Each structure stands twice: as structure tokens, then as C-alpha cells.
Length: 474
Image (cartoon, rainbow, N blue to C red):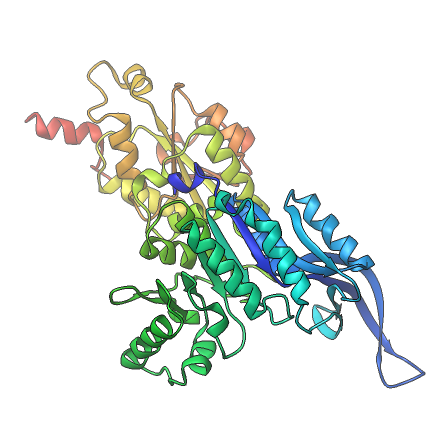
């Protein structure tokens, strides 16, 4: 994950841009003019839709994104350009075609339910003149891109001529072209690096009913050979992602909760493009895309995901290494803010945890039961020596942190240098502060910064001191 955080790929998105427009309101009566609901509009919002959702996902991941498309000479086109400018998307490759309508889809939502959608758009193919303008526009700087994504929503921008022109240009500079296809005829994408059809789209394109491992392999191989792909890929919804390079490989989904699958396909192709651009393998990229999709399906509506959210999600699944759970002060502050914003309850405890034993584990398991996220403050080596004497700690801080971070109950470990974690507790402001039962009747550092204090009794006869004495034969 750190490699991805240190990389800012330059990615070009070409496809059908649109505005998703939402009118939010309430409905309390039926119109006297006709048997229809009357919606009292209280809020109006707009977001980038279509290929714009791929752009949003890449932008959220930290990519340097450019866009090429065709819009109309209309107010919706001006609005769309302004939305791109607001998130610093390079739109110099946007072509205006007279008489074309810029796509805008308006949805009326009342009581959290969509009751009507109306569209203003052109769905016919763009002109050959527009195709040539796009190709001419990207020709001079195509070598600067790490990857190109073709996002096809079937609105006429991605014609056969444009797709084949882009793929031919990209091949000259060994640039990967990834395609989110539309329809059943994928021939216009021939020569792309990979496609990301879902199972239904793959069945329609290959005429192979995918109902077992053998039929899945046949469909993957047919796509690879017929469309001349480097990698064949099919997304399988709750079953994850399947790829074919030299053999079939499946990467299971990792979603914990599914609230809405809207836009998950856009997240998958954006994540794969981002990861491949950073030099990751298709195996690593598919796994990364599954993690990203696992985050967005837990959100409502077309959503995006950041690298930090993916890292935290991976940590919550305990599929990451222990190092990923060890955080600095600045890291944990940002993490806590995100968790609290999402309504998660944060629990904090601290200690030396010099020689990890069953008493520690049971104590931490109980602490975790008080909330959603358990953060453990860990005394540094110097801090332990000041508290326990010059012969301690037995284990150095990174070793202690690594073992703690490997426990299922522990979400994050934060080493601190001071004798007490007062500053850390103040920064985190936990919902619950947990200390050992031996603090009953005593002052507990940081109590004033926590919503509540919980005291947990230790397991009798289990302590680091007694373990050391046993080793020494005392």
C-alpha cells in the first residue's frame, strides 16, 4: 500500500461524460391535476456521472487525471466543464460538437426513494470530425500517460473508429488501455490490454453460459483470443474477479456489508488502472480492486474510495501485515477522524506489553468489546525503562508493537515517548478509555478527554514480571 501512496500515476479517461442530477424532497399529497405525487424539493445536488465516476474514483485514489470526450455547446456542457475544473481535472481534450446534447440525468427522490428520472442527452455516435479532433488532441502528449481507461456507457462517444484509434496510438508507446465495455459486441475494443465485463456482459459477448469453473475458463479464453487481449478478466459480483493470463485465477470479494453496488464497476476499473500504473501485477491489482469495491459497496450511491480507506478496510479484515496496523501520531489522528465521521466508537488503552501473555490478550479482547475500533498506546523503550527500571524492556518497541498489531482484537498500535499517554489520549478523544482493575479508586491519566472510563480486571497470576521471574528460576 505504501508504494501506491508514493505514486501519482497520470491516467487518461476517455468515454461518455454525464451529469447526475438529484432533486431531494418530501411527498405529502397527490396532485389535484392528475394522480401523481407532489414533491416539495428541499435540496438539489449534482455529481459527475458515467465516465465521470471513473474520474472521481481515480482522483480520490490520488491519480493525476485527464479526460477526453465530446460534449454539447449547451449549459449542461458548461456545467460539466466547471465540475471538472473544481477537482482539477485536465479537460483540454474535451471536444464541443454543435447540436449535441450534453448528458444530464435528473432524479427526483422523496422519502429516500427515487420516484422519477428524466434524461436530456444525445445517444447517437459522435461525428468522424469529433473522433479525429480527439485523436489529434491526445496524439502529442499520449506518451505522458501511464494508462488509458475507456469508459463506455453506450452514449455514442466510444465509436469503433475512436476506440481503435486510441488503442493504436497507445500501442506505439506501450501504454495499457483498459476498457469498461458496453453491449454484446466487444470487437471495437480489439487489441486493448484488458476489459472488465461483468458476468452477464461476458455471457452475452461470448455466448457461453457461465455456470461453473469450466465455462468460466472457456469464456475468459474466448474473450482473450477473440478480442486479442493481454489479460482476460470478468467481474463476478459477490464472487469477486476472475482473470486469465497464462491460467485462470480467481480473487474472492472481501465485502463485509453491502448497501449499494452502484458504481462498483467504475471503482474496479479505476483501481486496476491505478495499481497497474504503479507497476503492480494483475494479481495484486485484482486483489486491490476487490478491497476498493469492498469499501464502496458499503456506502450509499455512486461512491469513491481513498487509499487510506482501503488500508483501514484491509486492516479490519486482518489480511494485512502487522506493520500496517502500527501508526504514528499524525497517522492515527486522521484515521480516528474518519472513523468518528462514520459513526464508529473508538476505544483506547495503553501499556508496556513487554512479554505478551494470555492476561494481555484477554484484557485486550474485553477492551475491544466496548466499541468498534481498539487503539493501543505503547510505551517506547525509554519510557518503559523509566517506569520499570534499567533492565526493561525485554523486547524492543517494534517487536512489542508487531505482536500487539497481530492480535485480532487490536486495530492500531501507536508508540509514544512520554511516561504517560496523556497527549495521545487528548488527540484521540476516545469514546471509551480502558485501564486495568488495579486503577480502581486511583486517578487515571486522560480521563478528562474520554467520554467514559472502563476498568478491566487482569487474569490472576498472569503478568510480565512473574513471567520474567519464572524464566530466572525465582
